[in-house]
Length: 500
Ligand code: AHR
Image (cartoon, rainbow, N blue to C red):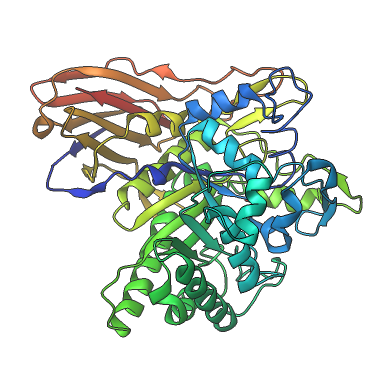
């Protein structure tokens, strides 16, 4: 089978904002403790952060990092995590039924972000707390000096303000599992008032109001409309969260998961634009897709990992990802890029150990999951602006989404350097696909790199025992002649081709 793709410079989506390659660190399971932070580890720095993990985070290429939750933030007292470590209280974390030692807090995490070259994106607690605490946290984090809380930060050892630009107004406040969850009306009012107060302190903050925690939420659509009717003029982004998994052995539907993400984005965009027009606003709201990933949630629910014991950093949500999972993740990232005009920011949830591209063992190794590869390569090669290709390809039938195209793709082009990149997935489970891509408009003459993730076993994984079972392969047979790039995509594969 064959496919034809045309890349046309008039099909411009948006200039690339690095925030589309964000990630997420939550105080959950072993993401922070025994993940990024392990003071006794041979590679730990003076703050107790593992340098081997920092190297992997840099290689992954994540930009903005959302922190400290997640469900965790809705019960969090940020003050517990600052000041002398031996005076910090141990608290119960109700979201994940574990103990929080507070040995890592805002100041340490901001230092960690600097070491990884990432931007800190902060969430405030609107579950058990409200406007005053959000303002206090902002003062502590961002005010230069000369106020009670900024001076406390300085006494605690951080003289320069953290200058955090992006702030989330709570987390998943539509979810009954969320501590202090609210109706859309109540949350919309609280979010609007909190946003107004935060912007009175700093009008240049970028604020994210909570959208739906999934497109299957019963309030999906109505939630966005109501929340935005209250808060539209005070916020800059509305969040979206989506997790995917293979169900009932239906790999075909699973490989087409990005169709749900597209539906999610289309719905939120049209709802946001409806509110914009209703309010006669000049502003266009963007989406912060600040939780997206593969998550075998059904299995976690069944295994009851959250038990009666109160433990520090228990192993929770530690999914091991397959080649197929990595192909789906690569396709979700293609979808985010194709919608980058409206999806301004995104966070892969999460970063280390907890549904994560990076795994660690206490006192031991750190390694890349299969999903690490499409993310790191896309983050590295995508430069300049996003172009939406025209794709002419056959379809296959799926039980969940009906007809789905066999191939999905997005391209990027950097006019200044003349470099381009094309990212592709082949969703066929049985057939290699020969794809001819018209890249004449990009003026490239050389294939700089051509890599692919695929395997004879679509369920192959990297594990503690075999950390390098799956990795990138070179995409054999890619040819560029007279503006026509020809590649053969193996079944169930994700590929990237860089041109110059
Ligand atoms: O990422 C894991 C959890 O998923 C987050 O804490 C929560 O926001 C979402 O439900």
